[in-house]
Length: 403
Ligand code: HGY
Ligand code: MN
Ligand code: MN
Image 1 (cartoon, rainbow, N blue to C red):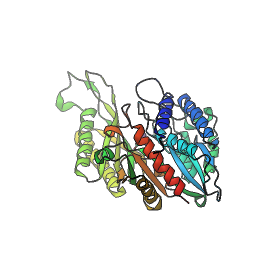
Image 2: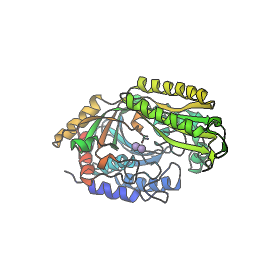
Image 3: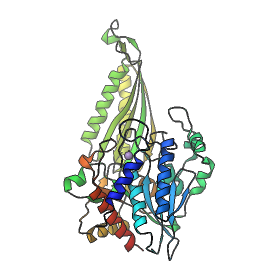
Image 4: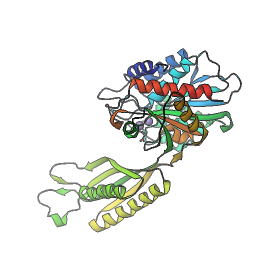
């Protein structure tokens, strides 16, 4: 054991301080908290002997050259969190990679390596995500630059305020021939590794995801004087829709879904709700299952509205295909784990990751680390320094043996 776990955990404790006030960690892209985190990451990347730069999509890049080729292996993950999230989602993979390269600082490796700290994977501040990986993969859609956050700040303005030039993002595309692959180390965010007593695992596939925004319009009315059979209650209709989503996912293999956000108008204790806006998210490791579920949802919504005399609209605002993670990189990660006496189980990722978008640039692999009770996207997210140290050992052995 190289015992890098303590160092990694201490760094994660420090960087978790760059958060908006409140429970857990809230660090969104292109904010003061993001800038603070980058200051620390720059410092640690420099200490690891890396050449540090910030690209115009907000990705902080730490690079070291290879002794034989400039072809590059990419490491890293995302710096941002969900609101009141945990200390480890995303940032763990960045800090672990930097700390491993600091350990290898004086050891020559034939290939170049870059650690990438992506600005925005969660898509919480703006209704888009994965701008950094998509820029590198050449799949970035400039249309997202006009999207606004809840304060009406456009993504372009947010980049500008961060000292970045949005029009340069499209030129960030990398040549696939120059890239040896992308390895993302990430907490599992689920209970599988813990249930198997395994500190690390190898990801077989990353789920596909789609998000819908739904508006149900009825008629607001007095909650006392309006007879039940003369009501057009938008929230009662929404309740039927929420049950439909839950039952559809309970009945459909390999499909999960959630109504995670809902807004009621006028949202008064003594008024029949006249309008409801809500989000629906569907995920599956099989794209056809997910797409069919989305179409079924749309058809149910229309039938529900017609039956209740309401109107409804729905828009699929985001989608991401499932990504298979297998092949040589995953096999080498498994061998590296075996070299330290570990059998790393293979498992699917129900969370999406930067690797999802990086798969359009190069082959990808993910190393998962066990998290306590499978909790994530919450302040109780927790890993042990032993497991962090084991993940570092596995990654270092992978890097030393890779060519
Ligand atoms: O939603 C996800 O799966 C990821 O944490 N953004
Ligand atoms: Mn993540
Ligand atoms: Mn997340």
